[in-house]
Image (cartoon, rainbow, N blue to C red; front, top):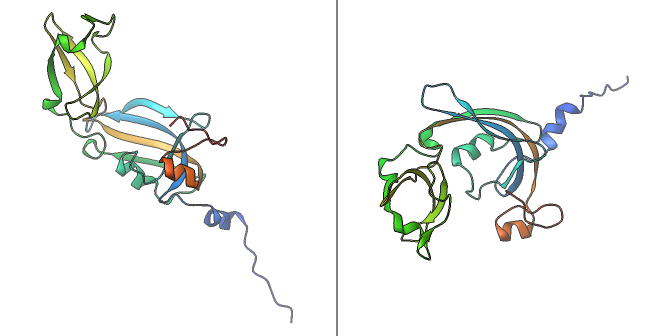
Length: 190
C-alpha cells in the first residue's frame, strides 16, 4: 500500500516564517492618519507611503505606546486599522499649556527676527529645565506673545490605517545609536 503525503499550499506557511514585529526589530510601515474630536468625524492629517515610510526600532519608546501595542506581532504584508483615544495618544488639551510670554523673550541682539511672531507660527523653545517644546503663536501684542504648548493633536482621537512593509532585526550599530540606519550605514531620516 502506497503512503499518501499530505501537501499544503506554501502560502499558508510563509506567514509563519516571516519575522514578527517584536522588541528591537526595525519596522517600516505605510499609513494614513486621521484625527478628530471625540465622537466627531475624523479628518486626514498625514500619511507615510512605500517611498517614504515610517521606519523605527520597535520598543525604544519613540512612538505612542498604544500605536506600538497595536502593531506588535504583525508581519510584512499585514494590514492594520485601529483607533487611539486622545488620552492614550497626545493627551488631553491642557489649559496650563497656554502661556503669555513677554515679547522680549523673542529678541536677539535687540530685535525680533522678521516673520517669527506671526499667528500660527510654530516656534521651538526650551523650558527652565532644558526640555524642548514647540509652541504655536496664538496672539501678539506690543508687550506679550500668547502661545499654545499643547501638541497639535492633543485632545484628538486618532485613527491609523496602513500596512507593514518590512520587518528585520536591528543591527548592533542601530541598537547602539538607538535609531535606524539606511542600507549604506547612514542615519535614517525618521
